[in-house]
Image (tube, rainbow over all chains, first blue to last red; front, side, top):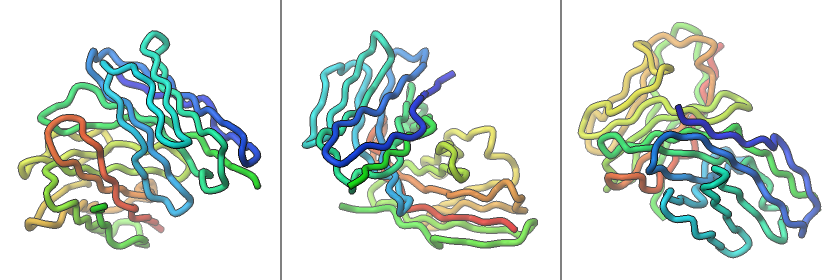
Length: 117
Length: 114
């Protein structure tokens, strides 16, 4: 069975602080994919990143960075110099071996991030 | 950027009524999905659809649920006889190609069953 755990239910920081959102996953698949989605107050799910299990290289996109560590089954997300607009619920998700090309994402419970001015 | 469109954004219905949630996936996408999110909980997979048939469905997706692609553009989720516990945000998603490509999600339909 696949499982994603986001232990931090809520995080609140002051603007410009750095913040890291944790994600730990479980899977028996040797090939799998990890995702982060952002859900702002308006409710939609916004794709942030997809990473496959063979690529452990960390990635940086502007103020966002992701740290994938297979040894600890973690895929953490860091926002540097946070801004009020970063306030949202962030979901980590996992997709295992693909069946007929369709993918089933297993989501974590989400972390509600509040950035205070 | 192209987007997945869902209508309506909000739907209120009485218990036992049938509802149809509508989605227009991105035009060149081949894989379609429904997910749902009960208030305050995580997003859960319901069903995936490819080549005019269901490719996978979850335990949640029982006989009360059905999906259809009635024409070349729409993708619908029907709930035959709604229950209170069906109240949730329903997200449609689509992806372009085989493999675990980026899933584009719509902005959701908030279903309230009274």
